[in-house]
Image 1: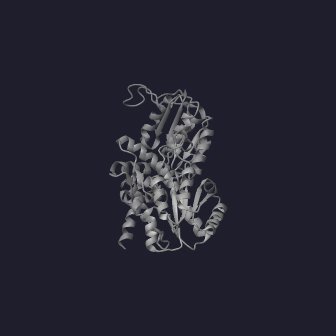
Image 2: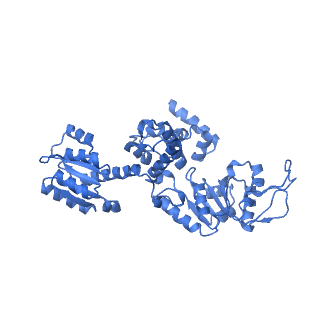
Image 3: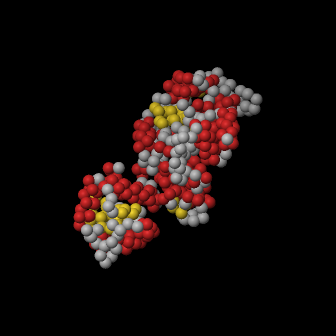
Length: 452
């Protein structure tokens, strides 16, 4: 916050010198850059010469009032916020000030804390609005083609830059939808192997009986239907990178074979007794805790250590703060361009909900799908609260009730996750990290709770 304060410029407009002096002193002490004016014409001259982030203006002033200044700002300075201060407070006055364009209405007398709180709220609204008006993202927010300026993502970028200079095996962990494959691609295309192939393999999407032949290839006659020899993914990735997505889904038998490849850089095609050397960098990902699976006997500890030479933990979207807004506007521009529409804007309330009003169980993938739907379905040029799906609309004004039983809270969260994935129980079970049978039982219990 201190860094933001130093960059923020505030113009104080009041015809009472003592008031100006008090406001200036408090704002300077908080780290803001402060300009002052004793009249509206003087304020306009300052704004024409200097970019101003926030104007704090008195209402009642000689000749030209603070409301006239607010109208001028709204007509000419879209990138400036306004706080209206008055010694004649009334409900009608507050309504008129807000309708004219003031973000805050501050009646005198007010405390230093009330002033600074109002300034912080106004500056936060300005910062959020600037996300919406930016046409392109600065290069610093999208290294390797990834988008993010939050501290967790900056740490991810730091590890990527280090990892790209080596050939060490990497384990990328994170919830579903956080962008593990994008990180893997960033590492490959930033490395010396970028001219060779990047081969992604969805370990959970290939039946166990076919996975070995898909990974390592097979010899002619190795099994019924093997009419000719065929190379596997490891041979295809020779000289490049193979990405084993959701490696936790592999069987213990397959894990032994993968361990041998990592140790010896040698693959055995199905039906062959001779190994073949391959020069492949292995990146793997998981949305489950491999140490927990090791304790349950479902994952080999020696393979885990082989994979976990460099570890990258991707943060869930809900912990990425303003990255949510960056991503929302990026996806809006992307999908609007595909359908030939101008990118829509987001109302302040929608942006608040996207950033703080929803848990995002599906992470970046869920946000991308949501923005795609909004761009296609929204008829106007601004996306507002009624355009949002139910799970997000119901988050408005939500106050956490700490008296509710755990079963009720769990049932509500399960319903939200189901709604976020369109009722797909397999996908919901994956996000909740439970199996489908457990999900069915919990849904049955949720129905019982609702009937009580």
